Image 1 (tube, rainbow, N blue to C red):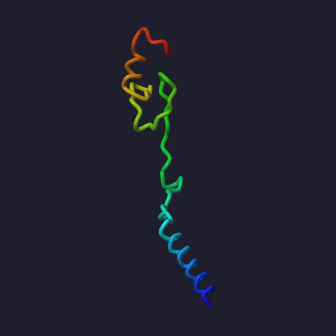
Image 2: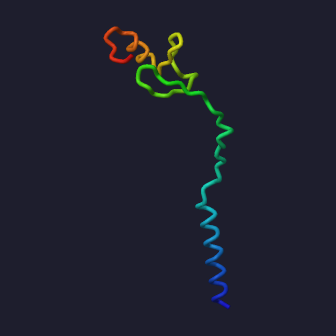
Image 3: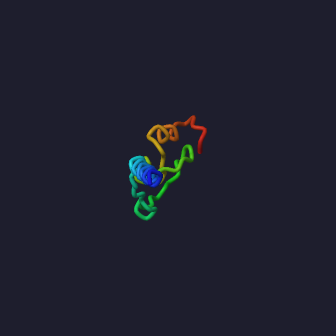
Length: 79
């Protein structure tokens, strides 16, 4: 009888510890929930950035204001 009580106590203890250590279920967004964003390529370095974050100069897109400025300099090695 004592053995059954001990086994039941150990199982109960195991279940309580497992419940306390379990991480909460985090709902991860599905790809459809994230929404796809159109990517554009930087005309200076080739990095792809989201269209809404790109720095525009006419029909050209850049990943940063620095790359837009560097692309406009006469000694630029990129074309």
